[in-house]
Image 1 (cartoon, rainbow, N blue to C red):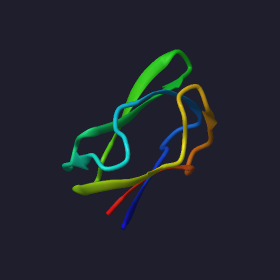
Image 2 (cartoon, rainbow, N blue to C red):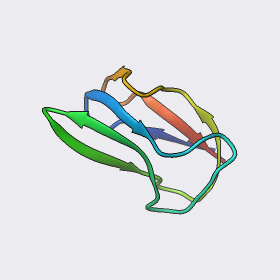
Image 3 (cartoon, helix red, strand yellow):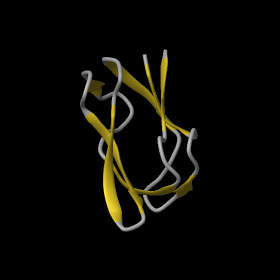
Image 4 (cartoon, rainbow, N blue to C red):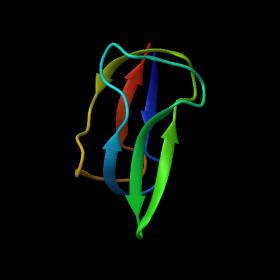
Length: 70
């Protein structure tokens, strides 16, 4: 199990995956917006998305878990 965490404080602009999707290393899981810049959040491991813990438009802090990949 691997948690995908926010690397910045900001807002979830777009969630690119859903539960059950297969992801590879480097696939974009979500796009975060901070200081009017869009920043992709990529999977660090391959596997299947088992949880999405955020929604689009949600405010997040650095270190928050956005998704879980197993």
